[in-house]
Image 1 (cartoon, rainbow, N blue to C red):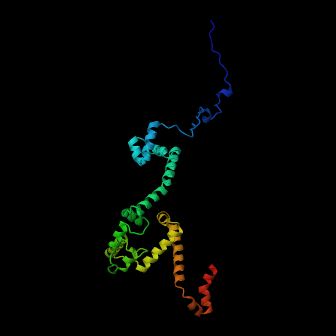
Image 2 (spheres, one colour; image 1 turned 90 degrees about the vertical axis):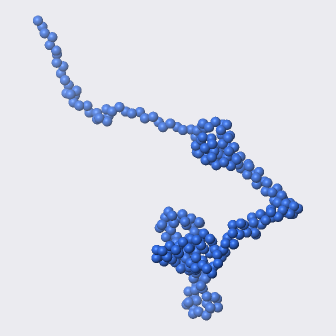
Image 3 (cartoon, one colour; image 1 turned 180 degrees about the vertical axis):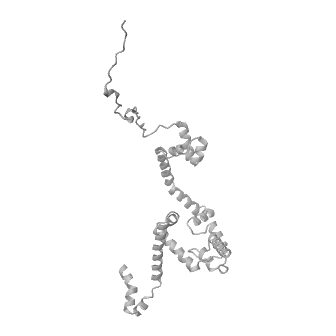
Length: 267
C-alpha cells in the first residue's frame, strides 16, 4: 500500500534571506492634500440690510464697538464694512460738500456781525482767533500763585515760556520737594533743572518728537542722543557767552582767532 509522502520543496537561498527593503521603505506612502486656495475676496456672510444699517450707524457717529454690540457682529467685521471703498467714497463726497459750505458760513458770520451786531458770536470769534482768553486761560490767569512765595526750584519747574506758572507742574515740584525732605535726597538746583529741561527739548527736536518713545524703549540710544543734545546746548551757551565785537578786537591775536574761527568757518 503506497503512502502519500509529501514532497519537500527545495527552498531557494534567496527566499530565506530577509528583504533588502528597509522599514521606512515598507511603510505605506501618505498622500498629502494640497493646501486649499483661498479667494482674494471672501464672500460676506452679513446680509445686505444689516450692512446698510451698519453704514447708517457709522454715518450717525456711533463707534465701531457700539455698532458691533448693537448688531451682534465682531469688531473686525464692522471695521471691514465701514472701511470699504464704497463707504470711503461716500465720506469723501460728504467732506467735499462740507468744505464747500465754508464760504456760506463765512458770509453768514459776516452778516451776523455787521448787520445783526451779534455780540455773543463776536466774543466766540475773538476767542477762536486767540485775541480774547478762553475760560481755561482765564482760570489760569486768575489762579496764578505769587512768585515771591515760591522757591527757585518751584519756579524753574512750573514756569512756562510765557512766564506763567503751570498749576500741575507747580504741584509736581511741591511733591518732589516734600519727597526729598522725607527721604533725605537732594534735588538739582534751579539752574541745573533748567539746563536739563533745555537738553531734553533739544533732544526732542533732534528726534522729531520721539525722544520720550526712545527713552522708554532704548536706553543706549537715549544716552547717545542726550549726549549729542548736551554738546549742542553747551555750544549754544558758549556762543551766547561770547564777548561783543569791540571786546574781541581787544583780545590777543591767538585768542581772537580761537573765538572767531568757528563762526568764520560756518560762514
